Amino acid sequence: MNKIYIVGAGGFGRELLWWIKDINKIKPTWEIAGFLDDNLYALDGYECDYEVVGTIKDWEPKEDEEFALALGSPALKREIVGLLKPKGARFATVIHPTAMLSEFAHYGEGFIMFPYSKLSANSTVGDFVTLLSSPIGHDTLIWDYSVISGNCNVVRNVVIGKDVFLAAGVCIAQNIHIGDGAYLGIGAVVLKDVNPGDTVFGNPARAMPKVK
Amino acid sequence: MNKIYIVGAGGFGRELLWWIKDINKIKPTWEIAGFLDDNLYALDGYECDYEVVGTIKDWEPKEDEEFALALGSPALKREIVGLLKPKGARFATVIHPTAMLSEFAHYGEGFIMFPYSKLSANSTVGDFVTLLSSPIGHDTLIWDYSVISGNCNVVRNVVIGKDVFLAAGVCIAQNIHIGDGAYLGIGAVVLKDVNPGDTVFGNPARAMPKVK
Amino acid sequence: MNKIYIVGAGGFGRELLWWIKDINKIKPTWEIAGFLDDNLYALDGYECDYEVVGTIKDWEPKEDEEFALALGSPALKREIVGLLKPKGARFATVIHPTAMLSEFAHYGEGFIMFPYSKLSANSTVGDFVTLLSSPIGHDTLIWDYSVISGNCNVVRNVVIGKDVFLAAGVCIAQNIHIGDGAYLGIGAVVLKDVNPGDTVFGNPARAMPKVK
Image 1 (cartoon, helix red, strand yellow):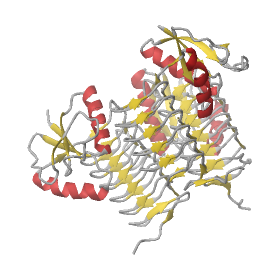
Image 2 (cartoon, rainbow over the protein chains, first blue to last red):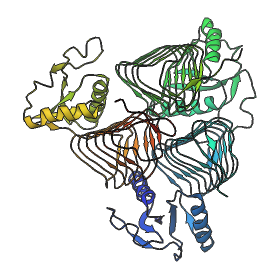
Image 3 (cartoon, chains in turn cyan, orange, purple):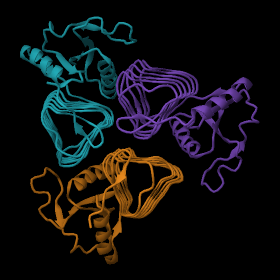
Image 4 (cartoon, each protein chain N blue to C red):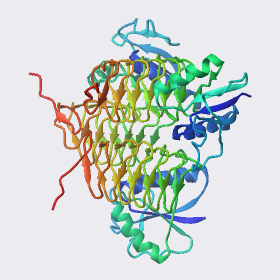
């Protein structure tokens, strides 16, 4: 059985630990080794039964180790993958037992699915995609490193680019295209395409002026 | 065991196939016969393990056949029921094993409940109602052919008329009445009654000007 | 086995009865004794298999009795607890079998968790908190008597004061503080702190003018 390290000991990491334990309860899958975090004191003051066992930047991945990215930032995921992957790190697929994954869906490396999330028929996600407890409709494409927070609704026939962040409660209507690196703010209701790098908020969602 | 035909081979149909398989896994209920669609090529290019076996308009229902409506449009459901029912078609009740159906709720013919949907105490839905993954609160009434998309919230003591469409993420406050044929746009937050035939969007939801 | 009384025979009570039966199916926990309501006719005209067996105001709690608060109003919960607790009433913890309760979360007396609700890692709720089918993120604090309706999204690192009401579909962004007694209207998207006693609606949520 491989060891699993949770990369990031913030709240996301402490929650991901819970889902990994749920997976292990159904079918023993990994030996949980603890957290990696560049802040070795990240768990100080938090009730938790695992520890930060090392920093991310100095970790030397071994043959029997897998890594689960507990990070809500596409940029940070990209940076850490860029650091660990050249050293041979393999990133775990972590799919909660209650998640709904269509037999006709496809996904890349390091895919994370939280409880009750859904990836529907004929949808595809790239590498290092993080899907919290939200449904992704059919015929949808999500590119690498994007993060979908909880209670979102990605209806169907949607394309979400790379490095996109959907905050909680975002709705995206059918046939919409979200450009790379876009940030969709909490509760945004997206009725038209979002340009790469744009930040949108509101119902209907509107782009915020860019900081120069 | 009856045969079941999924009427509509779009994304909705491919997703409904998944839920029908889930039901069969818990308790073998139907022999899945495939899809009916007036576009015989509707599944071309889609990974799927069943085929379009005939058109809707020419189908002659037999004694051992049931039909599940995989259509998101109330008008289209009404048209197809009008076509198949006079030929003797019986429409299947498709309730996902994880759906929550109160023992004191009532429903008509051809009711569809997606995973984790809820129909609460003392609520009633009419015929050919489609309930995706959303909760319907107590003491609520939904009339024939209406469609409730995913992640909606129909609080309680609500009346939804015939042929109403709720897009994803719609919230309807308590004691609201939605008139027949209304269209509630994605993410609409409905705080007051909606007139028959109106299209509403926004938070709070407002009626769009009618196209003459 | 203790008796359980559902306090409040409205729709909330009829729904809570359902969840209590679900708990009993998994593990027989209580003998369901019926409803308490100051309106002895509250169930008239409703299909239900239990009855109102007495009024709240006149009830004399006995040793083998527990009480489950089926009330959506923080003020009413506070009033009824003030009435029954001095007479020795003990309030039941009612956690649906599908609810997700972190092993590192904490809660007070009379906590109610509906199906698929979540209380995440290192979060704490006080006494008499009611959590309908919504996720509460990590590192969050909810004080006494507050009510979280369904499909809300309390992201993480949030503080919700006493006697707060979240209507359905409310989103609260990270690091927000909600003051005591606030009312967050249906579908409100809360991006900044809410003052005690304020009523907010909209996306983004804005405080309503106070009625003098």
